[in-house]
Image (cartoon, rainbow over all chains, first blue to last red; front, side, top):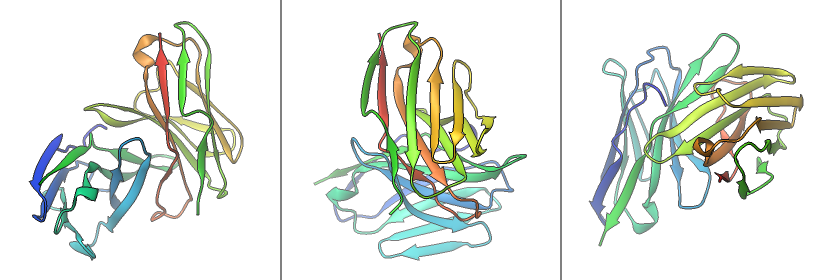
Amino acid sequence: GEDVEQSLFLSVREGDSSVINCTYTDSSSTYLYWYKQEPGAGLQLLTYIFSNMDMKQDQRLTVLLNKKDKHLSLRIADTQTGDSAIYFCAESRRDSSASKIIFGSGTRLSIRP
Amino acid sequence: DVKVTQSSRYLVKRTGEKVFLECVQDMDHENMFWYRQDPGLGLRLIYFSYDVKMKEKGDIPEGYSVSREKKERFSLILESASTNQTSMYLCASRGTATNEKLFFGSGTQLSVL
């Protein structure tokens, strides 16, 4: 995924908070997404945020958007072993004829006991 | 629930073979996408289609073509498979509203020997 960047790995202790960061470059992106991919499965949408919002909270998930710095983060509170997965940041870009979704490289979250 | 079905979970082909990857969605979505997923590179967009018989190149279209003869079906074609096309291929679909989320199939792991 061009221009959407994430670190590849994150390791946290069970019960701690996980923070996964992402930077993007297209300031005209209207929606930014977080997807989760568990081993052997396709991607599932976790949450998304509209570009005119700063924050969105959904149970244990908090998304923060800094539009000035083009920085998006996903915080998972009270991280559990079931949160082990690859997390993809993605942005919606309008092309000439349709909008397409551009993904980052994914961050593999592993949980330590 | 939206269902995006990819015809094969695993596929093994030989170099030079013509390969068809099929994807069907049941939600009358206008937009369909083909991505490939490689470790450390995330998801990269190969082709997408915003209507029947309409297609657009993504970021890495070389060596691939697509076909969208019916709204529900989007096929990815490798005219002459090469070993560097060994990858996980993910199909996705979404509607036309800007906040429509992307629904993914479970993927096809293609190995080219």
